[in-house]
Length: 120
Image (cartoon, rainbow, N blue to C red; front, side, top):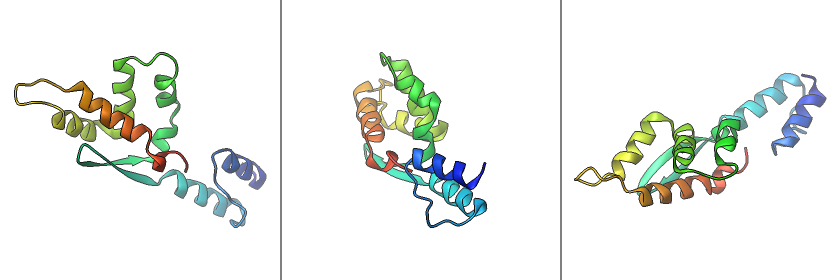
């Protein structure tokens, strides 16, 4: 990509590159912003969500249209990763093994609507 291409891409995802001079500096700036991790507290747990996961086409595809429970769960798995998803599920599971979908829904909403995930 040229410097102009990188500037255009960066503008498209909400990153200002005017102060970065040269292709390498622009690429480094873009990558550093895309690799940022947001800490989002839901149900008393701090979840670490790489911001670029919220901008993953797979997540967007799952959340577009009629949202089914399995789509929401898969989107949450893509956002959190397997370990944090297991931690969330455990936190939402009662002593008798009942998984509280309401609690998972609260966490899902809290994570997806977090302002920290909106922009790179």
